[in-house]
Length: 461
Ligand code: 4AD
Ligand code: MG
Image (cartoon, rainbow, N blue to C red; front, side):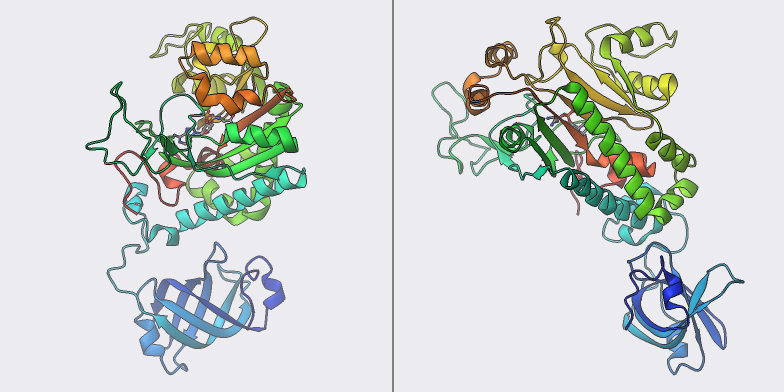
């Protein structure tokens, strides 16, 4: 038996040899004496053509198979230089493993992405989702390779946590209390002392704070895991459960952080171009026509770097009429981010040094006392894919920031202690994995790059 996994990319090796392939019927047609099946075994993107003829004893039965039946084909792989497929299998035997029904929903026609979301149990078998989820897997591996090759330690930060990293209160609570009738303290707050963990616990919004602990021991670390946000944003870029990659580097400033992020994005693009070429070609033809050119441009040019203050000036002097008026101090809205990255620079842009008030408590205060050493990476088509910063390493400045933001110093006691025992400059960022996949594939909705998207009102599968 020949392992077909590498056959598609190295078919020459198998030409004129007996092969066996088990897979699902993608299309089938037959006439009196001969029939054709396009089979896909999941290990490669494109289908392989199988020719079967009436010398097979179950010829008639094969001809009646419905799409998505599973079969095993044994036969000779031959080159077919004059036809559409470069080669085909001439079947010597076709064994039917599992019949499919004629009401199989994924018939050979174009289905809308919205419809395919309603059949999340079948959509990985469609071309589009086969390509999306292969790219997702290749990109995940590329990220690990990038960091491991550079000696970064992979840290598993907790999923259940009692700290709110972003301080934005967008956490899903994890509790065994009866929340219809919870116990309350004398002050009228929910009393968690008899709860499972003995205190209020939630699903993590970010592994950063725990990542910092490890960076201050291992120097360079990264996390790569699921994160959760109970933000009720019904947009094409927000999910309630998404995956984040969070490197944290010690003895490093904001510029080192940007260099790392830029290197990583370029590395992942190159790796995906090399290891998922059929998939990227598919996206380039059917989903986003300029994709391939764009990806090639990105790896060959420098990302832009501008300060928030400069970005505001650019927006104000652009003459463009924005729905949301532009003034220093505001958070950039999607329309502003898109204008900067798509209209002004037409490439990925790091926006740095945001006003302290609109960013999280842990970001390092700049000398001007007004801005923080923050960086967001904005990319055409998607917007923000990375948020990061240099961290506030000065104990007293950090305490002041925590208090000014109405957070409690006690909740962050261990985070503050890190600033007492061998503190150093350090920096890190979070890359939204799904947003990266959107960028790599041209898919426009986050629901279509998550195998099982969780968004407000939706957790069907
Ligand atoms: O900008 P954010 O909120 O930053 C943090 O969580 C930091 N603690 C990261 C760090 O410095 N270690 O989130 C980081 C990235 C965003 O840029 C975005 O790509 C993604 O995570 N993200 C989401 N992706 C999908 N759905 C959501 N609801 C997301 N919220 C953030
Ligand atoms: Mg952000």
